[in-house]
Length: 384
Ligand code: GLA
Image (cartoon, rainbow, N blue to C red; front, side, top):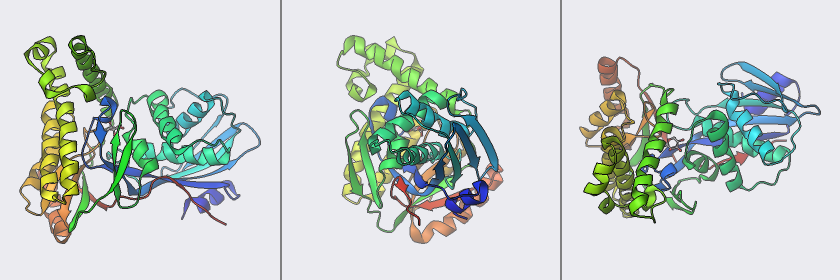
């Protein structure tokens, strides 16, 4: 049933607005966004959908269809982070209120086919769909980039994860068949068509949910900031790891920070370089060359940034034995979730069969697979 019909079934009347916002993949450039570097994401063909209608009173009534859960609250008495799915909706309301926008109550139904905890940004999808819907419902006239920033702040301040801007940017700004090369320092970006020839983007989901990642994620951010503070003493032009170079990572820096902070910084600087090289290779249609950069990215994420886990490492190691896989790496925040792979179309089914058997026998878990394509970002859905 579509989200509009779900709304009618649940609330007994027709919604005013239906909005959709997708999850995302990221080809390369991980943990670089909050270091003001580059990322290479795309929106995908899985999304969060919200149907929404204005109320005359101050009540907000929410229904998360996939969980079968209801939640309601007075819009002027928002709780601190309630610690569950409603935070992604209420965080957006909270940000709109902080912008001085006056909202009345509303009814909202949410459904989402982006798998949760799989590193495909279901939370950003929900936040962006909510932001787009509320913007239209209350005629707030916010631009798409305003919605991106607002959704990020909702996650940072209400949910409490100090994430960067990549997920929301990809969800809102995604384009069919294009990846986005985004400079997270000034939000300049360019689309370029992803011409993968016989290869497809395949995600293998470890089934390990990254529920503890919040704390570790924020810790990585702090460690990067520590590195920047030390570098800045000698190189005042360094305001983020984006401004740092390998040459700055000399003996003096090495001995001024802990080995952990050194490794975190080294990874980020190298990842920005890999992304730059990777974009050139993609433009030359060199999928295998790009795949090597993906392997380099995974190694750095696993050994230097330490955000991988044994299940992700296992899947990436398996992929290296397959000729028809050009590249593979963990994707997103880490500690679970998916690997992203570039696989020759004709080999996908056989590889999935082999991988799922081995994954089951060694890791004792089921392996899920999603084949995906770069897709259009947030949209209002018209209906009669
Ligand atoms: C999560 C965050 C993003 C980004 C990635 C890692 O998905 O939400 O902002 O930092 O991790 O690249």
